[in-house]
Image (tube, rainbow, N blue to C red; front, side, top):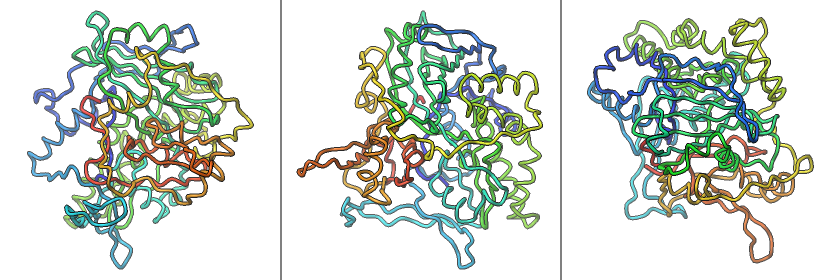
Length: 496
């Protein structure tokens, strides 16, 4: 069941799960046509790019547009009789008298901002089934409710989930600069040494280049703006020449799970299971989660088939998951992300030993630090960051980028971003953190405006929302609740 998730990726795709699911996909004109031709990894300083041994090992992988792949797979599913309902957001979990999940309900359509019913009002529908699988992507709204309701982390003593925000553009570059299949990852500048993150730059086909920056949301400095860090990154002398003379086609942002092995909850609850990034199967050092998400879905489907035929229960999904290559892969990668809790250079040293020497077989399992929302320091501990103004050549302001995301929300509808306590922004966020929601949001959804009494009040521009979920994660007091908007609201990606 989808709950308003949007595809955002220009990923290097590992076809391992697709090979199992559709062995003949190469003969069926799948939109996977660019094999990885080179795999580079750089440490950036402000002026230099220092080559390092690549930990990614992208041999046999492909540079793809995930949105195109998903549309193609949707067509293949429909050919097999699967019913797909785009444009309807799952907004509510349905339970029976025994507290078992029996399905979901979509939200009502045609509700005005004041809660009244408009002329086009249409009641949401209930979709019930013997088994419900939640596949909402990172920080799924309903998946998080299920995890809390049934204490799924506590059942396996999993740690909290930790996240990063990925900001991305797709460019069309000059033919002479285009290298189909070329893959580049960087670490270091422009982020400070205590902020984990890095960039990616993938050459797709048709002169398209996917470029982005990933910033871990456990960063400390409340003045940090991931969006402005990305604009700054594109000015690096090793990056800017590729983009000059090119054209930005699309812009987007999305959070991704970085908790890895330590943060996997027990994925089964009464009446169903959680699959994909809703459960957090991303391989952090590879920055890949599509193949593991697909495999988890396949294992859950096999378990569900057994249940419906009376031969087993859903617990076999958990058993088979732990026997699969997904479990082994995430176990070997488990210490990469928490190694950087100690800073950039200790993290590089520890992760290099893990990857190149121990090959993921360390006898120790490192722990994550504080949850992301608790990691933000008060303003007294940091100085404001002065970001350069956009040059409108390779760097741009937020309104310009937002236009390129094709984001659309009908204006007259209830806001899907809600404050649990409307007083917290003015009483806590503004005086102690200088309004961090105005910076961690990559779409300027949140801004403080001065009212008639001269007081600053938080204004929420929900129509700008990219559905990245950063606000739901990073708000210092967990005061912002992200809920699904009406219908097809959100960004409209086509080549991401």
